[in-house]
Image (cartoon, rainbow, N blue to C red; front, side, top):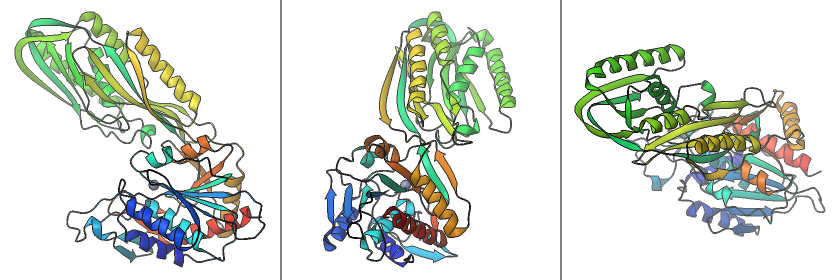
Length: 475
Ligand SMILES: [Zn+2]
């Protein structure tokens, strides 16, 4: 078996070439040049994805081809006092068994996949079947490269995606996601001599709607709905806003209310009391901060009574947080919904959701619920970009082979896992009939930060595992 020397050599070459998302032209040129120099057939598509093919190492091998896949872009972050510019590339430091970068992110996510791929394509002494090595662009900014990659000339029946960060953990499934906007009509009426009351919820922990949804943290949009509903008809709503992201748990929300001047102080006190009750409910999980500001007495256009009832009634029913857990993988969130943005306009309010599931039908079920909520309030549900899930396979020869090999090689117990976020595997699973996929990678820490580092020992072990798998798959 080859040691990881070549892999590290290629990784160093990759680090010399700036390759942040959207700036993959030079790294793509380098890959194409690599293929040309070795007489390997390749294809580069219109957006920059590169496919390089290499025939089996053994003549007459008729085992099915294996696809090796990773992404060529990286998340580039730089400390303000870093002496190197982006154009100077990544300066590597080897320290305590880790590889890290001097003052920037490292880009082992996913440069290491490129390095493994190139070392395979370059090798003359590794046994493997036909290889189809796919390097995509713009993974970090929404899986754009994989979304637009044409799989029709791929012959591989096995796909090894190298883009995870824990050695010995074999990913076998990922969630698909869809963005949907719930639009509810609003009617207004002019109210005279009312006192302005601004209500702000802030300081919530928030978090990633895929990776942190299982923590049960309160969503500021949902908390605001509960708070407003608890006021009965005492508060007239002028607007509610949350300028968040669909894929982040809402950590703030602001409402502009109008109340009768003589009840204003009482109402503010009641809001504080209700938020204190919510905080008791979320004790040990999160803390909601409340700021109320009383303003002038003025006239304002607020939601009508009917609209107040129907819109708040609808918004209190929106699905939020974990909807269901996986039956196959313990601890994995299977389906979730996250309202992340809320926009008020004169005649409508719009709540934007990110709905994730590793099972297509369950994602559809959540969308159906939202559609019903919309219909009951004469509103609309608009669906946007959808990326496919990679569903768990009961029978996966590749997963079993990888886990057995890992156990045999290193005497350690591997783990099959899945994530409640998107991986490029979803697109390949959707487009290549019957493809058997695993996602692997060496131990990496603090990815996407200037502390990003990869374990050299782990990098070596994953390299051995890849070689072993290819040897088995060439039989
Ligand atoms: Zn990655």
